[in-house]
Length: 383
Ligand SMILES: *Cc1c(COP(=O)(O)O)cnc(C)c1O
Image (tube, rainbow, N blue to C red; front, top):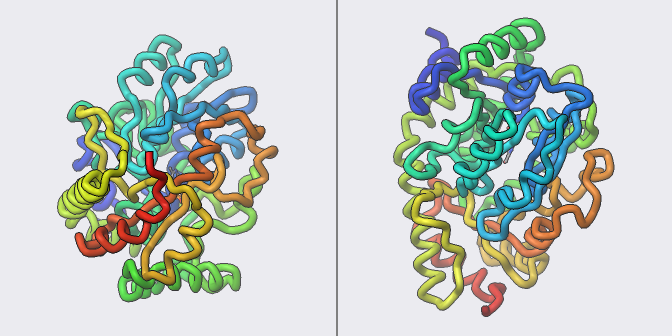
């Protein structure tokens, strides 16, 4: 069996899903699901107003309208109290994005969706292994999608996958793939393989900022496969968007799947260490309900001078991230082209100004966590 089929099968098994489909990127997986659901002009798709533009593009590509719900400040997920008022006769899907790995309030979302007969799609790009009331995020909705981009819990450089248990939907996705999907060029696949190698060698917590800047620069020069290009800040689909996963991506994915359980266990432990150390230092850390078991991709935390924290972190050899910098990350997004007006989601806008995220990927140790907290503590507001 080839790597792609094997990767898809193994992933589906992990999630006990009937079917899975691999793609060049997570956003392509999302597009395939939405298209298979028949979403098009005149339709509305609901998602949190704390997301990235790449996660809105597939909605726009299909000619539908994106409708944003503000988030709640603890988990950065859809505030379920604001969800129902956004539903109209034209609402055809709700995207439950499990932000940073925190599970959405799934009982309420599924309940509201069922009452209105609207399918729920789970965005699990940041939530591999998180559970809600003992059930895996990704197994609640009609379908779910994942991303394997550099910053995600499991990475194949770039990559994406959709899972579903619904036979009809799976058949539709198959059909769309058969009709429309292109294969990545040999060059693109080979460049990505080379990048994975470089990544394995260079990305350590102390050097990530330098490596990331180098990658960005090379991307601008067209020398690496960046996760996004300039044209993807426009709500129009490019010809090479709908692309399949390459064999070497799938091979990397298979390697990573073998370590998935220890990857998840590590993230869980590091999150608990962050919680504990911050708690001991007297900081008021966010506590999610007991029935949520988040596996975080990065550890979000509110600071009082975000700009300064980000600027100083590399000098101290500390790896600090900043998503989301605006409700439709990144800051360059022309928001008006994406149905977002300033002030629509005030809780999200505040989070964009205040939240940075700390690393807990497999290369982060307890020592890294201590060093990171020592640095960031100066920026945490005393409550
Ligand atoms: C990364 C990400 C995506 C898109 O994934 P790509 O593989 O980069 O297309 C979608 N949603 C969320 C929440 C993400 O973090």
